[in-house]
Length: 362
Image (cartoon, rainbow, N blue to C red; front, side):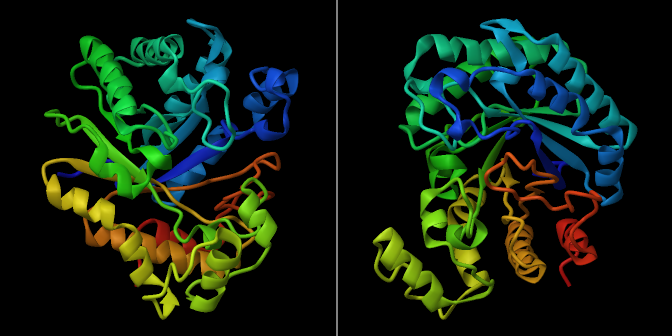
């Protein structure tokens, strides 16, 4: 099956998600929205950005947003933020772009900080989660080109707990709209390896998704959010000398010979790392699988970023997997900045990267 209109897209973070470093805030302050946050929401992304993304020949945008940005209090929603999303959708319509609305950080499931109460262990948080999506359906019921992605990067939890909440959310949305396209991702931070644990629906409007950042020590090299990369603090090329990666695994991760069968870190590794996605496609040829997020931290040399992006997209295309790259622009507050455009002039890091993103790999 084809995910028409969603074959090569661009993700937007740093606007309504990843706009501050929650991990450095005290627990009691993480759920606050400040005047600086509101000013940021008003100015960070404009119609010019959407027009530029369209000029890169992308066909869709995945917009991440956080639950606290949408909720004033439980079940009471921020009209000011919804107006931002209204405007964003109207810009996308104007420039011929389809939309994925992605709940990037739900209360109880932040992919990069530890929380006291997990979404999947708290009935009231789950009810709020479902209620938020029902509110989105109420507001965008007539927007057929808008797709709902239920949750970004469910953490390492029991798959059936996530299947249960996803199923309840799908049922609530189906009562309102039998045709809404809904995206459901795997656990363990959208790992390709956990796609096999997802509940499969007899519903052509359910799409499945995964993320990939393998090898992590390359894509997140010298990053500041994950302690391992911050500690190792080493630049790595791609394709790369296998000894660099073995050293990382053995001295930092405590894993021996993790990459022993590879002579170098290259497309063979990428293909192997995506085997779970390839297996899913083969097992479910009548379903749509979408690579919803992948990218590299911005301070890697363009040549290596391009090489890695080319290999990931090449493997996706080999298996008829549509995709969306991460990320258009990142704020200084985002600990892992994956910007694909220059922060100052907001233009793509290279013409070659633009060609690769739209699938021109030769």
